[in-house]
Image (cartoon, rainbow, N blue to C red):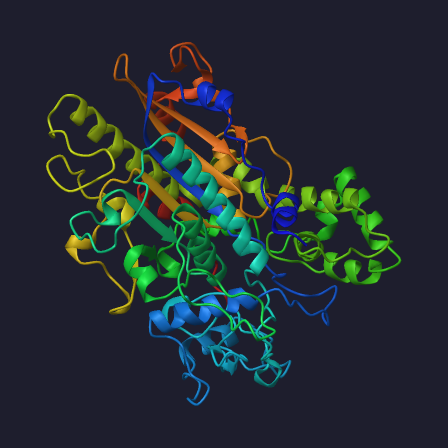
Length: 555
């Protein structure tokens, strides 16, 4: 299957940057001040393989290699001659107290914490990617017995970014390069990592959740944004597939400062430490969902399938966090994303219906103001604060208060201030000199021209809903939500536009006269109208904590 066939069929659609599109979206009287891009990771293997538990997923040759390079770079690669790390006993005891059943199934929590490595025909050692780093604790999601950890370098773990997903994010990065480098020129054409007077962090902020599939997706997007080639590659005489032209290694991490956070500090998952938020997702019974006629129709159609109906019924009838339908949709959609045929009696209309039910269940709480506030107040606060800093700096530069420094954050007078502490709270740097560590004062990013946030469907979807998205479909892999901040050169006023993939979002607050750009319409909000729109969602940590309530005591 050709790469262009894969990405067009499975990942999110992106606009074609034609001359007409650029004239309409980026007229000459607007200056793009900043873009913040939240992107979902690329295609992956199913998070849980329930319909087809014996099916192999041989789509991770390149992904596994990149994971090994990355783990070596941050000092977490475990060669096959060395013993496995000692598991985090506190975490294991916590899981036992919470009723984790993996021990009853004869599974070892730590057996695949960091995979034992195997050797490719090229002599390179590799290890398969885990779901996440979990920043020093035993994996929360290890579910594979050590004896069954495949040593085939093509095979994927559950929930692992695949080579197809890497291609999709490289495509997104290429799109961002064409738009922000080639056409608008707000970013430098190339990065000279040897030029310490112009660090990337002067104009680019990169953050990703600690999931392996998100970190690798971030890598792939950056290689599309700034392509590079290295000498690394497979032996031409071997049967291995071609290895990456760029490596997720120490040189890459020196070039691109990527931030992540401890799980309990991460704002891109939704606030699942909030009781009044999380209780809306806990084990919704199928009987409740089937009270809606259209969902009952989908349930009956799916459970009556000749090929997988009984398995579907077992899954749907068992309560599942967030959505009872999502595990079925996810596994089937992962087949489609990798060119694997669906069962003979599963058509794409049914698959789309399963996705709509899953999206309805997962996003229903965030359709409400209370759900948006409890779940995503912290994240929206970070977005708004970063935007406000950029607008203030833009205005100051216009007035000449900060000199005439380079618009792309080069050295000299007029450098932007450092990014505010509020937006960086909990940030850790993926570093080759200290693994995962806090930044030094000189490493703190400045107000970015471009901010990249590697995230998930449950990040991009709710944020898009906040900004007026009316979609009812599960978000495709590699979906991107962009917040763009503009300055009108004629009067110096600032405006905001939000776009989900190829669709510009309409924000209801911005529709009245005076709250949007007079020439570009209601999709381009005044900055004040944007802040007015998100204001009901903003609250201090103390206020959100009070509104979240307390988890009930378990006897």
